[in-house]
Amino acid sequence: MLHGDVLGERARLTPEKTALVVVPTGERLTYRELDRRAAACAAVWRDRLGLAKGDRVGILAHNRVEFLDSFFAAGKSGAILVPLGTRLTAHELAYMVRDSGMRALVYDGEFAAVIGELRGLVELEHWIALDAPAHPSDLRYADLLSRAPNPEPRTPVSPEDTYCILYTSGTTGRPKGVMLPHRMIAWNAYNTVMSWQLRDDDVSPVFTPLYHAGGLSIFLLPLVAIGGTVVLHRGFDAAEVWATIARERCTVVLGVPTIFKLLMEDPAFGHADLSAVRWFISGGAPLPVYLVDAYRARGVVLKQGYGLTEVGVNCFAMTVEDAARKQGSIGTPMMFTEARLTDTGEREVATGDVGELLLRGPHVCNGYWNNPAATAAALDADGWFHTGDLARRDVDGYFTIAGRGKDMFISGGVNVYPAEIEGELLLHPGVKDAAVIGVAEPTWGEVGVAFVVARPERAASADELRAFLAGRLAKFKIPREFIFVDELPRTPYGKVVKAELAARYAQMQGTGLRAPGSETTP
Image (cartoon, rainbow, N blue to C red):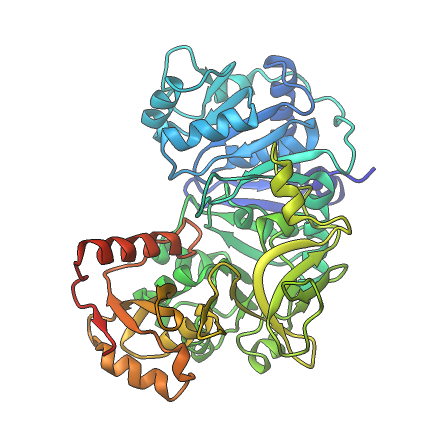
């Protein structure tokens, strides 16, 4: 029976292989040891807490081995894990607790204050502390695990049973709980191994948050499937990551553009030992070309990936050679992945034209928890998931993301894609970061406004940026206004929150105030 207990299957095949290195503690766990921990956790859930198949268990914690206990226990018990974002307020968490209907919540002691506030907003049967409890009545995880009953055989599950619920970042409106079935968990792992050509000697540092689909599914699950080694960081620290890559001989490394920029700016970038690295891969947001060039100058390949929580995170693949030949592309669809580009009438667009990206395959989710309307809007009757992202396909079948459908604006009747403008702005030596939004304008309908973070050592003026873009973009694509800011608002996974920029711009217009350094085209 197909199910999501990828760890259990790998432990059966190579029990003595090193599965996990925990950076903060120095622990090194074999697959047998990691699997025993997960099995004990599943037994505690079932026999000590009375949790049954289908019951929801929340976890609020930084990256740590106990997080993996809970994640892999879901694959063995049939209980549904609900990872929660560590930057959320008690009010935001309360919505997810109520919406998911969870019975138990496992939490990191660092979040005792927010847990204390959350207790006043929701009721739960079980509060379980990984460290010091927030309340005297809360259970202690270590005590539960030390007195865990003997593990029993895995709970039978069907491929379509929900393994976990991951809430979207909620950049607009209420977050939606994405239902990831056991089938999807397993297929993402298998498909990534095959399409990315991962190996059992691959070693990868995981420093992106485990509560996010990227932390769980991009390298963690695939490396467990093939029998590689995961090096788990508590969080991101550039110097620590470079040291880990050298010490553990890491071979494949995931990050988002913001992380790769911070790694590049760290003093260790110029001398870190990268001799074991096969390639780096970026996801979560468009990858600026200057980062690709910087890593190439260091002798390593930086590829761009693509995925969504709803479609298994890893959906496209490319070889090292193609990463250079097709710079800026996300590659071709992975094995067993179908991709289409359609217009607003859901007709296929021509090669080279922009259309909405639709994906279909065994790695697609089952929709949104308690939200049939959102499910119907995203998943059509033929199983195609409508991503809302815009892309082009070239004559060789390689895809390039043009931006989010909601980001696109129409100026003088012509579609304008902010991602294209942002990519060009980031090539200017005086630009550290940039984001473009469309705003209403009486003559043209909409025009672009660029929010720019300048490099302190070489600040660029609006006129300089305008002249720079004039040689690269059609006139209608050049932003009407450039607003210089200290930083851009981003989600924990690196995506710019453009709704916040739009609100900020509207407020500036309404009050008649201008941001410091903002300049408008005459």
